[in-house]
Length: 440
Ligand code: CA
Ligand code: CA
Image (tube, rainbow, N blue to C red; front, side, top):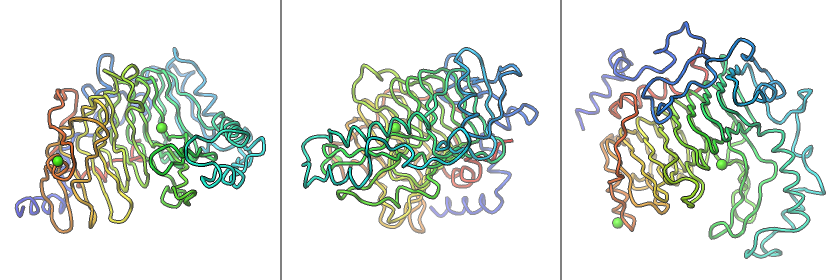
């Protein structure tokens, strides 16, 4: 322990040519400053997205298919170019999804139709009135769905194949859900995604023991897609965090879904050097227990990301062979932490050399949560708790306080990856280098 802490102090004191020299250089640097951001490709072996054909996005675009977009209308027009033609879309400045074609802000009232208001919805489906046995139906639920469809049409553009979306400088996309759907070969880099809020959350009294409010929009949804690289992005809810939402019917009025969800038979994705912050359900890999959709798919690599004040799903996995390494987790006390690694049905998470800073009262036995899986490989986990930093066997910690026990044998060993750094380097490097606004 003493040796470890001294090593940490020495490394931190310089920050540190020694540490940086042993850290995998971000792809932006390894491919050289002379190559424009939009023309850079996923490095060889950099996670599951490097499998088979690799991931080149729109890097081969001809000059006619290189766009710089500054508002929602321009972004949607650039995305509409079809699957076959490589395209590079540079995002400049702040793009707000909830705007009309003149750029004017749209509020939730602008989408509402057929008499939907939140007070009317709350009155109609109050458990004291509606009960808890069936999902809402009838005119107000129909009005909610119709209103929701109007918001979806505005803020959920599809991203097709052979596309690179890259932020210039400090680019922001807020109130928008990029939907990578049935696409192959997509790169999304250097963008700060904020607050993809749903104006029309749906109450479901049958979801869980107490019911739940469910929302539609992730910042990025990847469905039925392959070869996706999300790198050096930031994800948060801006001035509208989950923690600030009211309770209705005793449950949090949840206006966000995931930050980056990978579902519906998607496969071969690399999620690297991103910063996820201040959010509840963050990264869902697999949304159904039905093996017909996802068995043999959902293979994802998650490395060198920051998960700061994330309550759950970092990630939550079903089916996939998911390599989770060198990530930085900050779990403050009193924030409502649930878990980080969700072990779902037939999931095969291989976690190694991750670093956790746990606040007072947060136990290392909370890091893993069993959602119906049987196994997780978790080695090299470094945990700081109070003044102590030590290696923790988080699988044993989980098994000591939960039943049934999980095993450590997930039946595979990752081969597609960049250098796996010792976890002691993670707190020194990843918070400095992860997130948007750092690539040029
Ligand atoms: Ca989602
Ligand atoms: Ca046990």
